Structure formats: C-alpha cells, structure tokens
Length: 401
Ligand SMILES: Cc1cc2nc3c(=O)[nH]c(=O)nc-3n(C[C@H](O)[C@H](O)[C@H](O)COP(=O)(O)OP(=O)(O)OC[C@H]3O[C@@H](n4cnc5c(N)ncnc54)[C@H](O)[C@@H]3O)c2cc1C
Image (cartoon, rainbow, N blue to C red; front, top):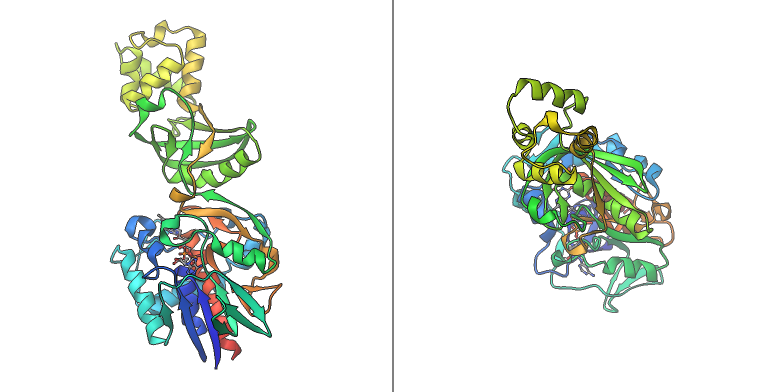
C-alpha cells in the first residue's frame, strides 16, 4: 500500500482523493478548518458544476490546442458518471448543471461522504509550505512523507477561501514554469463621469471586446452597470482577456449594443418614429431602454432631451445610432484577485502528462484544478476542469498499485 498526500481539500483535491484511495492510503492536507470552502460559494450557492456545451471556445490557455486532450468525451462522461454514482441528481437549465436541491452544500456533502467511505483521511488546519523530493519520496514541511503527491491548492482567486497562490511558489521551487497568473471572471473598471448615473442598471445587451481597435470576441447577455464600470456574466467572460491585454499595454474597449435584436438601427428608428407619434426623443426611446441609459446616450450624442426625432441633424442622428448599437467604454482596469472567480495562467500544460496530470519534470507529482494554465468561462467550466483533472490524477494513482 502506497501513501498518497493531496495538498488542498478543494474541488479537485477531494475528487482526486476518492479515485486515488483504491489500494492506497490517502490523506488530504487542508489549511482551512473545513474542506471545500470555495465550492460552497459557487453558482451563487447553487454550484453550477457542469455544462453540456463543451466547445473548446469556452476555455482559455496559452496552449489552447492541448485542452482538447483534457476535455474529451470520455473524461466528461467520467464526471457525469461519478456524480450520478454519488447520488447527485442534476437540474439542467439550458445545458447548465446544478444539483437538484439547488444547494452547493449537497455536492460538498456527497463528496465528503464518498471520500469518507473510501477511507480518505482529512487533516485540517494544516498549511503546507514546503515540499522536497528526496529518495523517491516527497517530504512535506520536513515532517510528513509520501510516495505520490497531488498538488491541488487552487489559484490566487478569492483568497479568503484558502487559495492564495502558494501552490505556484511550491511548483516554481520544484522547477515548473508558471505562465503569468492574472484575475479572471471579474468586473471591469473604466473612468467615465456618467458611471454614477448608470450604477445599478441591468440590461440585456451584446458586448464586444476590441483590443487596439480590433475586434476580439463578443458575448450576449445581461450586463450590470456599476459606479466603476461593468459587471455581469458576459463581462466576467471577457475580463480575463482584458486583464491580459492591459498587462501588455494594449487599449481595451467594450462596445455595447443596447438593441442586439435590431438589424438596421436607422430603419428601425425611422419606422418607430412614424408608428409611435408625437414623442420627444427621450419619450421615443424610453419604451426600449432604461431611461437613465437613454439620458446618457442622448448626452453623449449631443442631443437635448426635448427635441423630436425629425428635428435632429444628420450628425446627431448618426451619433445616436452609434451610441445605441456601438456605445464605447474604455476599460482601464479589472477587479483584483479578491473578487475574481478564477485566474488565467498557471502551470504550463506542456509540462504535464495530460492523460494522468503527472508532472513531466518530477515523477510521482500530480497537479490538478486551477493551478493549471486553463480557465473557463462562467457556466461550470472551471469546476469541470477541477473534476476531470482530479479524476485523471486519482484514477491513475489508484490503478498503479
Ligand atoms: C464566488 C465563486 C463562484 C464560482 N462559481 C463557479 C461555478 O458556479 N461553476 C464553476 O465551474 N466554477 C465556479 N467557480 C470556480 C471554482 O470554484 C474553482 O474553479 C474550483 O473550486 C477550483 O478547484 P481547485 O481544487 O483547483 O481549487 P480550490 O477549490 O480553490 O481549492 C484549493 C484548496 O487548497 C487549500 N490550500 C491552498 N493552499 C494550501 C496549502 N499550502 N496547504 C494546505 N491547503 C491549501 C485551500 O484552502 C482550498 O481548500 C467559482 C469561484 C468563485 C470564487
């Protein structure tokens, strides 16, 4: 019987422990007084743990081509089979998986019960600060010893849950290359005087990211307008790319289309003005968009609110069309690690055997979850990577002995 130590009792560490426990003695070392602290926060307490749409475009990495080797049909099926086996019934909304109870705690309890049934020990309030490789053994904090080590300490995102990036330092000392780690899935920040007027508004929009005035990507969904800038799931999904762009001194702009269902804005407003008669411009637009946004759009278009559509100059009309469907917000920053849900960057995938998650540099060392240079969009993708990498590492070790 070999001894396996898992550093970090988060999503990927706990699932790895269950698979590794076959024929092995497994212990999880967790710095918090309870494992799975971050899991409880996921999906606003409901835990969006999987998604049917597993297109690779939902993931980011410096080695994007390697993700196809991890997000395979087999691996995805192993995740679903596992949750079925431990009694989680999914509630599936548009392909997004939540436990039927709508409680992340159900996933936490089911994982811990299974780990307990498999004989996994969990040592809490134990901070791992040092790992050495001596004579084919791993020595932890100069006091514990094991044959196989799975490092599952998470990224730098949301450090109040225990993941403060210490895993990267440990891996650097062991010789691994860490691709620059930056916050992702977070709010973006600008510096416009009108932000105070739109704070608190939510609107269904299409948002497009432009880097140095070149189109990068787009998202459709609800945007939350804040006193500092923009938030909401579709903004979160752009934030990792924006952070990386800003770090490389690129100009980052978000272009908001407030009327994504309109094909030709000029034709649409001309027709609306004919049909909805005797309205000033603000009255004409109010039924479409939050009036606070209308006021900002009119101000930006140099149009006074009591004018009628027919009274606008050609230049004012063009400004209005542009600001309704291509409202530009320059982004100067993103929120930091404290409020990020995940991180871009991490351990280079080139240094990992992607069938087993074993380090190519150090035999017997396995790396899982957010420590890896993969991050996903909102929608269950980050947990999917935690589950798959944990299963691959645990299963390989479990089958070895
Ligand atoms: C608010 C929020 C909402 C989220 N919602 C979703 C969602 O709905 N769907 C989704 O897919 N993803 C979501 N995520 C992301 C998801 O939670 C993470 O991707 C996932 O938890 C990563 O798992 P992990 O095992 O890599 O790390 P973590 O879950 O962060 O676990 C790491 C563990 O290691 C421990 N640890 C760290 N260092 C040490 C050390 N030196 N010694 C001992 N223990 C240590 C930590 O205390 C922690 O328990 C969300 C994240 C946040 C913050």
